Image 1 (cartoon, rainbow, N blue to C red):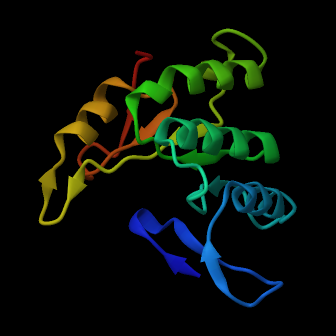
Image 2: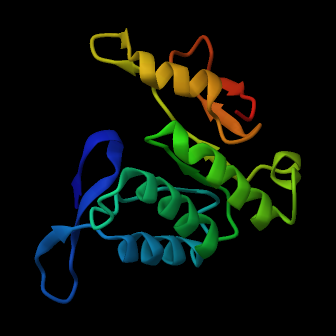
Length: 154
């Protein structure tokens, strides 16, 4: 497998053809269902980027949906746009059983690293981290002196 930025697979080895190809949303659904069957896996991070979803907003929402649709284990993903936070937060409440239910027992963790080499902050990532987490779910943030924040709903 070829790993792209952030460790997510942007190419997948097609087992039928033996050729690497761009990862798809169907691959993400498949990978998520596969890990759900593995007893030694207790949580799952978005493993690939669905390169067949060109709209970034649609990508964020469909990625979160693929994760929560195909496993009952806790999951981790990242978001590209702050505009996707509200619809994903609503979806997580629906999955959890109703308004504000997700905050009572979070099962999706947002991961964002506002630090890029050489140890610089990216303002848009930091602002997303500070102000746009989907709920009160844990949001690990670099650097280590602030390893986890509980962030408020926008």
